[in-house]
Amino acid sequence: MKTFRRLLRHLLTTGRAGKRAFPPATLQAIETAIAEGETRHRAELRLIVEPSLDLQDVLNGMSARDRARELFAQYGVWDTEENCGVLVYINLADHQVEIVADRGVGRVVTAADWQHACRTMTTGFAGGEYHRSVLAALGELNALLERHYPDDGSTRNQLADKPVML
Image (cartoon, rainbow, N blue to C red; front, side, top):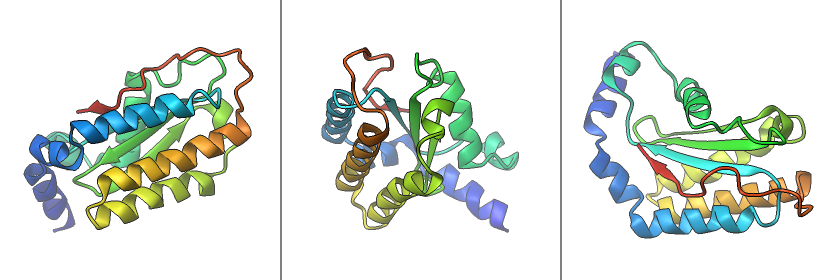
């Protein structure tokens, strides 16, 4: 029954739902927040929004965490000079936010810190506040990364700042 409900949610959560939750103005604000934050720290943020998984992935039991790890590799978030890539993955159908961090960042930032940013988003999403909650979470992440990976003038932008809508 649980699998059926999840399958139904993924079937009914279309690209249109993604565009409604993340219109062009929100995507632009996200890109700006990422770019601005990366002027203050050496880490690289990448944000991916996926309205729903392929039905076969749902039937195979793929979790949002598994999908985030898959996209972390697919989009080369791991491929930064200091192993400081961070993927923020949002799955609308599952109402899940996952953060996958490369080993350099993962050694200095705690899981509790990542989870706080995830809760900022999921709490806002529950109230329909996608724009505000994502920007608030990005502010938290940028401050966290600035504390642990402050800019020293040695890095360049290694990953695109523009969010990806799948």
